[in-house]
Image (cartoon, rainbow, N blue to C red; front, side, top):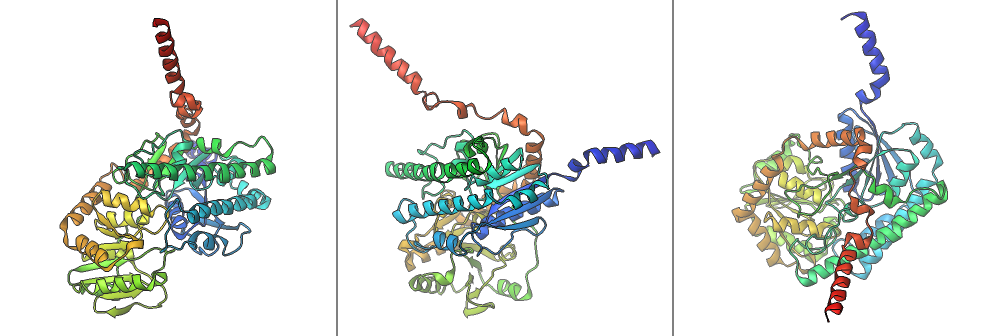
Length: 511
């Protein structure tokens, strides 16, 4: 290799080195819950390992969510000047996880409004945080990422002059994402994210599904998003773009779901189903204690966990009693239960272990793992199906009800109603998933489908993020034309009106 080749190489690196080493990426993550922070943290780690410089900005909506989510990215945790318990008391009480949380009840509708107000107040603090904006501008970010539930970060990315914007969904798709991208979700066969329906609905199901869509859309558009737009216009000037228009310009939408699993729905070319990248695929070793518990199970191991928000210790006493009495009916199975108020793993019955933390991924890899009892969180469902195991699901709030319907429709699990929870119903559900081979067969079939991809989902995700940056302006030219149509044009109302008028005119002339 001659000196000229070396000099040319050095010059090329000096000019283009930033892109060789990767892009600078900002991920905006409100601390809504542990699962959302975890999702964003795992995405940050994946992109960091791929060679990008990633900053995970945690907007402290709920300071009680202590996790940072990421092991490898740069994490910045920023106060939103909110009362320490405001978010948690608003979201997880009145009603609580084990109480009636149907979406169109007065309490839940009011809760959605209050959560929107929390986001608005946080947005006010963010837009006026000049010191934070100066710090972030120094990074000269190439790509900005944000979750689907709040539009404030679109204003942040605009203020930072970040051209490439990636819209994230830690759950399955909520209608406001496709709506902004010009895709309509028909209420007749696409269940709302917060509605307890499958894609086959009765007349009254469709009526409720439509109502859920309209209520959530009105709160999002005319309460949260409209107010946040005004905040940025007040702070940055009246010419600041509308946040809905900014969201419509997203080059990529990353969705934590899989098209072979979720209910079919219309989509656009810049919506990427990337479910599965959050699943830990590294086979870690169990400790001797956990290995002994799993090995000594006669017929198999069943895990029970209701996530970070709904704690088993907060269950009504009668529900707890029913659960443990049902476990006694299955003496040949070992049940591992997440129970938050103990410091060690305790054996409380011949086949029941309580623990404050379950090594869930490691136990799911054990050959005696059989089933999961959970709250229907989307990450737990993907994890269970990745390992080919059926589920008993007790949906508690938000998207859990729709998620559980997906599992029921695919015949990989059974739903039990928390408000009609009885010993016989729980026992029958558990017996079915443990003793009817159809559920395990179906779960393993879907596991194979989830694994059967042309390339690993992690590799596809990283590629599409880079593609979105490299071609950000060209992607914008391919946005759906429906975004620019008037309501009457989109619905063909002008065409039908013309046909009706023509028909009436023709009838009048012929008469």
